[in-house]
Image 1 (tube, rainbow, N blue to C red):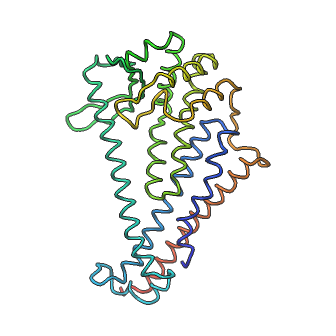
Image 2: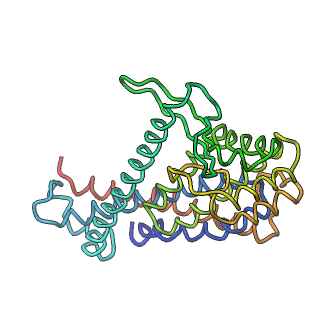
Length: 319
């Protein structure tokens, strides 16, 4: 196993260049899916790496529930500085799992609170117009059925203040944008990269990159639906100037805080190419190759370490 078990902890660095360059050469739909896949695989590999280090580290602790053979010197020699690495991995894995659990609870809590707030409005109203003069709009993902509670479909929530600030065409762009968030299930992409960042902080830049690419994806869907890119750009820019934070942070908003000028500039330009991979002889193409190679190396290193540790533990465990 050796030092290869540590590689998945640092190989997420290989995905950072493509996180910055993908938007220049790929459609935001492809960018979102690519970065989500990279984050998910690299996050899982990091988790497996920490788990393997925890097994090796706790094998030497007195009173541990593992078989005595697992503290054999051959097991300790499978990882350099096993005692230090194992102890550090225990803390890191505990922190990662705590952060993942907190993120999942927060996501569930925000969604439940938002649905409860919308329950006071007429059932089936879409969009749900909130009697609030503060301008904001956001997409509320659906919630599955639970005992005593039926399934709740995804809905669009928009304040009265936002509707007053936009004309008819801009309102159509707003609704198309929010419907794209729901139809394309952008909340799942955002949650996946958020959880990956909880496991390995090196993946945090992918979170902001995916947040931007999902907004761009919804912008492109809105422009296609209304048939006017300039109208959609005007709606995005106007909403960004007047919007206030939604009462439930964490939901996809029409005027998300962030690089709105880049979104407007992209809408004023041509439709992004629908290619699935950037040209090889471009910075984005090279960055994509580096990210793919890093992800493959992380997966192979994790698999190699898991198999090696399994064989060592099998040999050291009396049956």
